[in-house]
Image 1 (cartoon, rainbow, N blue to C red):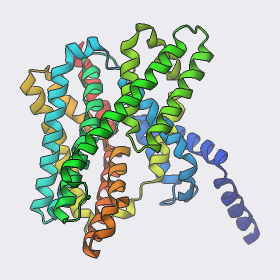
Image 2 (cartoon, rainbow, N blue to C red):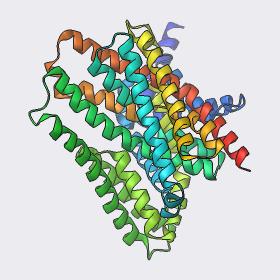
Image 3 (cartoon, rainbow, N blue to C red):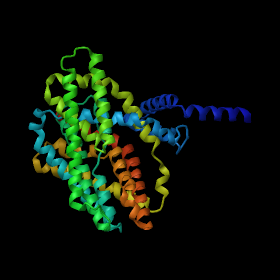
Image 4 (cartoon, helix red, strand yellow):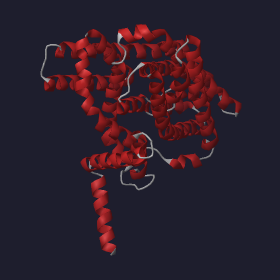
Amino acid sequence: MYFLFHDLSALKDLLSNHPMFAAGMLLVAGYLLGKLVSRFGLPEITGYIIAGLLVGESVLGIFPAHMGKSFQFVTEVALGLIALTIGGEFSLAKLRRLGRPVVMITAVQILTTFVAVACVLLLFGMQMPFALLLGAIATATAPAATVAIVQSLRAHGLFVDYLYGVVALDDAGCVILFGIVFAFASSMFGIGSDLGAGAMILEAFAEVALSIAVGALSALVIHFGTRRKSNTNEILIISLGCIFLTTAFAIILHFSPLLTNMSAGCVLINLSARNHRLFRILEPLTPPLYALFFVIAGTELSPGIVLQSGTLLFGVLYIAARAFGKYGGVYLGALSVGAPVTIRDYLGLSMFPQAGVAIGLVLLIEASPLVGRLTPAQLLIIQNMVNIVLLSVFVNELIGPPLSKFAVVKGNQMEE
């Protein structure tokens, strides 16, 4: 009996370290859990995340942590396609109709969330630089969850237009705000860049501008490379090739892959009405990529982080203040521009999911040269910040998608 268990354990270790087996296992586990939770009225995304948590090292240990690096390509491609899809919703006709309200709602909810989170953390004793940084990170949302839910519901209409608009602009605003806050936080420690705070702020704006420019250039290449093509396979190959190259280029040069691909989608949809076919051709590729993306995200979550010293209190405060800021900010923004009641009452519920952007920003702090000059006590706070954001991701990626689904359904129902 011992040898049987030993052989089974060895076989599990062998298979779980094979990328092809891991990909198949993640897809099947995600599908089964997605179907299971859908029976309880929850979106399939929640099932994907739970599946990842179960097969990850925190529970069953079937998917080793080191395997995550083998699937980084999947995550990058999924985020690229998600961002492209969001950008594709920004046709000039929609922007003329929704432009000012969407910008105002986005700006108000970003500012409200930043102030709410930073003030609450300061009130409970967190040092100002760290509270400001967490406040900026809290403004990030998870466009992947939004796009996947809307596509699964096949929802369209005014509510979805507002939703896509706010989510797309939110991450752009978050990147800009984080760059400014990070510059000032460095100055507060007295160990900022030799360039000074002003130069660091300009550098943050330059990163955003260059990301948008690279995306626009990619869109031009795709447009001129496919406009005379009628063969679907040729269009798919050219489009995917350009998306891969653009995403890789953005990552290598430390631009924002999200902003780059959003820009590409926006330019494509406005260059020609014929480019709508590009999005239709790419759409069948998204379900398995989205499933893998969310299951992999689930494998990276660890419920044990809530037991670490200081994480639980500040984590709960962060999550509560962020929820208040997101919902309250959207409500106030919608009220100020006279948006429809569906937008005012339900759009804020779709802002809760938080994932890749927030994790990327907090890990950027941890990997920055700034950390090498901090005191041991400050380094401990940085580590605690990472755990706070991971806790927020864990909670918001579980409760966020059901709330987003509820909001989209209610918003669409009231429009009919």
